[in-house]
Amino acid sequence: MAAASHELRTPLTSPRTNAAMLRNSELPQVSKERITGALEHELIAMQSFIEDLIDLARNKESLPSSKKLISANLFLTLPLAEGS
Image 1 (tube, rainbow, N blue to C red):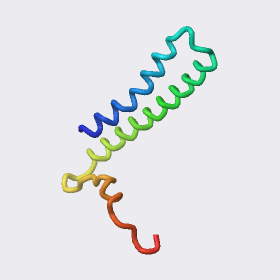
Image 2: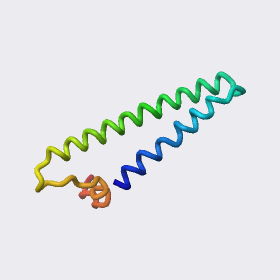
Image 3: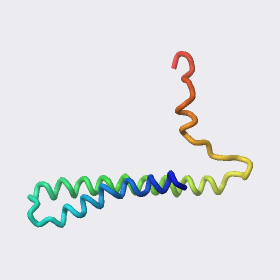
Image 4: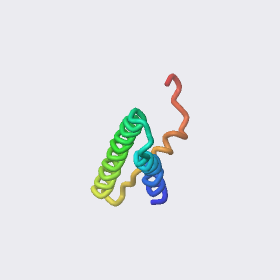
C-alpha cells in the first residue's frame, strides 16, 4: 500500500504546479499553451496508471487464493540467460 500511495502522490505534484502557474495572469500565452499541453499529457498518463491499478485489483480478486502476484522487481534482479 505504501508503494501505491507514493505512486499516486508523486504524479500529482507536477499537475498541481502547472495548474498553479496557469493562474499567473502575466504569463505569456505561448507559455500557457505549453503548460496546458504538459498538463494534458500528465493527466493522460495518470489516467492510464489508474486504469492499470484497477485492472490489477480486478485480476488479483479473480486469482485463486493459492496464487499470488509476483513483483516485477523480482524479474529485474534475475540474471539474463546466455545469448539474450
